[in-house]
Image (tube, rainbow, N blue to C red; front, top):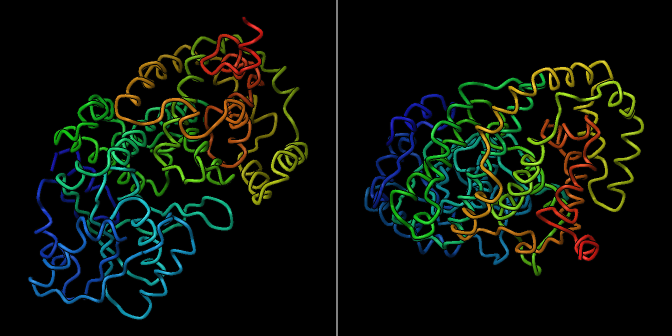
Length: 453
């Protein structure tokens, strides 16, 4: 284990041990007994992950004298992190006291995390793919009542990541994890903004866990794509670190910004690609590119010349924002969420003026911090392409018009302050959307393309 992971593990409040290495499944029984004593175990898997690792773990546990309840296998071919699957697993766990061992990736881990918590139980996780950062995260991201929600529940007590299994996972899953790790770049930029405007201070410990070494962990997309053990080890370690930071802060702020709001909105709007669910990482890939392109334009803008009085004069009342939100989401099944989240982060004109003064007076310094944090759009796009992740909105079934509308709608659905809130507060959203989708933009709309020809 690297010294960085060891240090982060000490900061984690819930996960007591993390083992990353090659051919280490035989360590599972000893780890189980060390942290769960003489308790029975129950393996939670789907049909694929049971074949990949679940059966071997079950055999190793039996050989080492660990008693087990019958394996719980999700059999639905369209399994995803949805609340009905939590209920199915929670009902099964309620009839015994065995400690769950989640064998799988994001979906199985989140379902087990919440179902175990509902039964008052700790659990263990054996990762089978470097597909997202949720293994060691506080909370489970589950779709319930039509909306993607984060349910408060502890991270696994113990986590095992066998590099031989992970590097041989489907390349799409590894690419998804790479994209989720890449999202920490724009998430960090959003936190810099929130900190600079006095909205949410940076937690130095959480920042360090995620951001120190992040650029290095993302430096070999080709190696990640090819299953290079070192590159994959760096990737899975970076993803685990994101989870530890969330444990430390009891918030997803260290690892999630506007790019995740895009993903959450698409989930809430039930967006699919040719009828299939899109992985979290692939959604975040496009979200990250969208926000990267936006920041590239923002860095050219003279916010040090901002007309603060004009911004305050254009600032809507809470009542006007509520009406606007209800109009935007009138045909959805999450009408109240926009109202609730927008109210939670609303500031009056006095508070707005203070934020904008901080922006205007410190823009040169803020811009330098953002430049040091961000990766240029073209480079981000190229890296995602190399790793096998989507790099154009059409790759996940999004029209450019839909992507443009996402910039407008996404900031309503989460109370977290991001770059989108900056644009709303400075009354520049339309200006920047024209930069991105106009005739010279990176995602020129068809009608704008025709105008320029």
